[in-house]
Length: 410
View 1 (cartoon, helix red, strand yellow):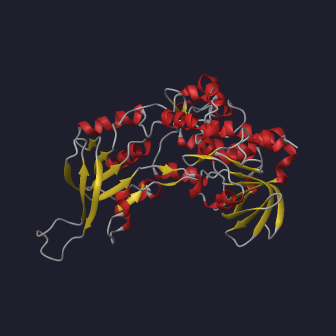
View 2 (cartoon, helix red, strand yellow):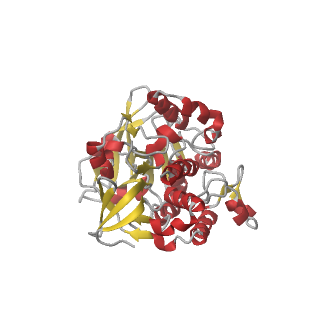
View 3 (cartoon, helix red, strand yellow):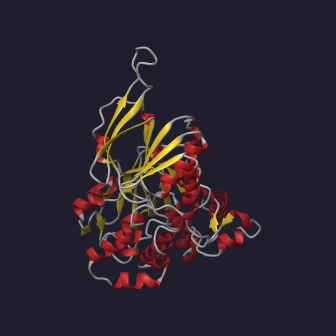
């Protein structure tokens, strides 16, 4: 669908669950708008990165209940799973990974969206008057009257001590969770240090232990369990009514941060880890932070002169004492950062059409547009309007409702 200097009405950047949710909600209101919408994603496929991450981390089921998904009908997934009850996991019918993937394929098929994704990244977004020019990774350009940024927009968070490591070291011995594929890992007999207290750290630990490794899970806080990312009250008026009436953006930002409260483990994952702990396969180190890490290659001397290659680490405990540790791999389950100024596609907008920011989150209009410009944002960057679940599947639905209202206005 992409051509050189061709023009389209609505360009959607990204082909993940947020983009799919937006497009289905828009087509529900305007069924004849298929030809107006064009989606851009490097993969050329819907949901590829989402499915890939679930596969790489061997995640058995979603954290969101079955009512949260890309189709406009909240009960569509339950109907799809009518004869597949075992794939809806307790306590709130959490869809199994395979079930959710097949359901999304059905949604794509039903809404006739197979051929809507252009296999290209948008590498630059140039504001025009009116509209935008999209510079694509395939060397082509397109102009669009309206643009929706739906690709997540976060970047890997690397702790400061990582930047201080003196290279070289084998790349597979220090990895961020976004780059780890458990199905490719061979770690029997190894010692793996996992940094982070969120659900990703739990999935990595389980995968490593099942492959014969011993794991240390380290976090600067206490490990705690929570069923969802944020309290279910944030899915409806219980909390959102007061949130939307709050006129102070700083207070809204505080509400978002407090509600998510960093990373947490689900009760099911925590139960598995406790069993592994009883067997001596995992150790929890809470209120502890890495200060330095150095890769120690094996010497050329006699085999018994030095242990095999390993990481030598110093850690700062809660009582401010330093402790030495060794491991074979370090996995960083440290999540990602969201800051509007770190978004390459928004650099020109920040210069030519600046809007207020609160700790890196843009202050968007109620329809999630960038001021008066026809640029709309979804995901975590829309949290000041949508709330703490902005980056979740439920947030995709709430953002879609707002953006569709904006797109349907004259």
